[in-house]
Length: 302
Image 1: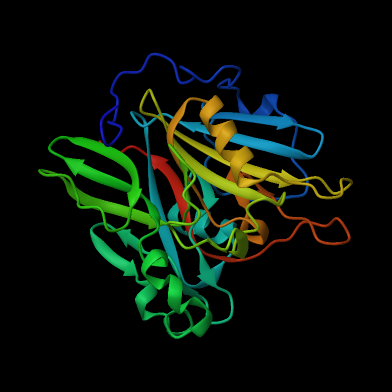
Image 2: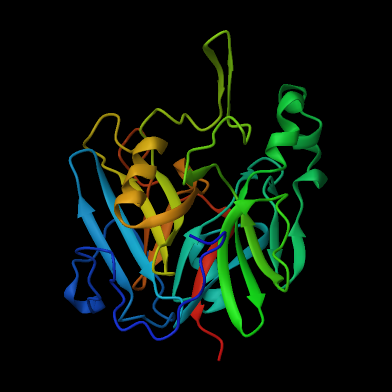
């Protein structure tokens, strides 16, 4: 496997390597509730979207053929709903993105759009001046990110650490940071999400071993992208998934690289004209949290 997964042209089938994920028309599916409808957004009838209902959570999986569509980040000056991003960018699908501080609404993840860095966590004083994070800042500032490159005539995606160099003869178009890496290995401690002392966990910023609503993106062996959003079930105590189980699911679906996105209350997916929220409150109602950044599906530029 090369250090990045190349864009494939002329795939004859969207579901290669993804058993059971079908390109179903939107009218053949059961509407998702709770949700929010965005009627003005064009529907993508061939998007490979699967919903799998399990005892303790619901899995929403989207396969994105990169010969037809591109995945790009977007960011808002203030936090915004997923529907707002979709309407502003005329997106076909959207997934919540990187980490941010809900108090000052500044990103704690790097974001690059069209070659320009538009979010820099080193400019977030509440992050950089937090005494509790001083020992972890070097790791926090080198977390995993999704990248989109222009390499000659080809567009290529990769999932790498922030400080990794751009490949020779390639230009960085877009990047969105989050983390940790889920595949090929789970890198919680190297990215400053967890820490141990004398065999005891003294930091676990994501509650990695606790079930929760979560989102992730992965690169499939055939070159396509996979999105996963895990939604809690209101009637189930301790509903959700751990990061290790999320990594296992992505590997089962054929992902060779994957990274975690901001989860918990930020978990949300827009697909087929509907927004599905992942987190439930104590009363079992969906948490509709505005977010700072997202990933968008748009038609491939020709």
